[in-house]
Amino acid sequence: MFKNIKLTFVFFLAVTIHAQAQRIEIIPQINYTFGGKIYGRFGDLNIKDSESYGISLDIVNKNISFQIEYFYQPTIGDYRDYFNPDLNNQRSDLRVSWYHIGVRQRFATNEKVVPFAGASLGLTNFNLDSSPNRYNEAALSFGLQAGTNLYLTERIGLRLHGRLNFPVQFNGFGFYAGSGGSGLQASAGAYFIQADIGTGLIIRLSK
Image (cartoon, rainbow, N blue to C red; front, side):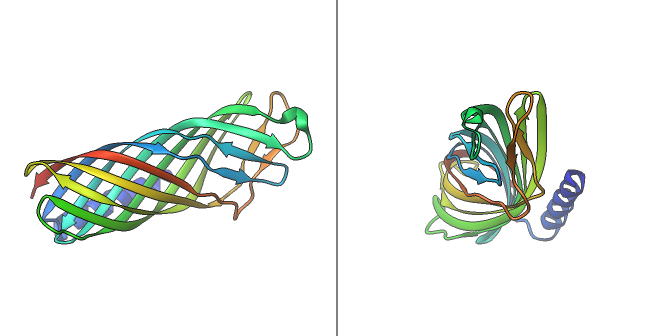
C-alpha cells in the first residue's frame, strides 16, 4: 500500500510542477503534537504529547499551493484495560508517520505576510512496539490546517501553523502487555483526533 502511495506522490508532484508551478517552497518543520486516545473493545490507548518533525514541499500557483507533506512523531502509547486492572499503565514506544497531499488557499496581504488555510488527505502509519509483539498498521486520514508565512527575504521565510489531523479508519491492531492477556483491538471505524502547532523554515525556489 505504501509503495502505491509513494508512486502517487511522485506522479502528483511531476504533473503539478510541469503544468502549474510558478515556484516551489521546501519547508522543514518542527512541531509540538498533542496526543489523542484510541478506543477499543477491551481498553484504550492514550497517545502522549510529544515533539514531531516533518517536511513539506509546496508547489505555488498564484494564491493556491499544492503540497506534499510528511511528518513523524516519536511518542509513547499508554494502555488502559477495561476489564483487567493489572494490565493498566502498560507503556510502549509508538511511532506515528503521516503521508499527505493537499491544497492551501493563500490570502496574501502583501509579499511579506501570507496567511493560509487548507486541507489534506493521505495515510497515517502506526508502529507500536509492545514487546514481545510489534504492530504496524495504516489508517486513512485527513487534515485541516491554517497559519501564516512570513517572508524575510526573497528566498527565506518562516511558517507558523496549526493543524488538526484525523485518522478515520483502522484495519485493526492489538496491544498486549508482556507475554499475553487481553489487549486493545481497534476495529474498522475507530478514530481519534490529533492537533499540533509548529514552525518551519521556508526555502523558496524560483521556477
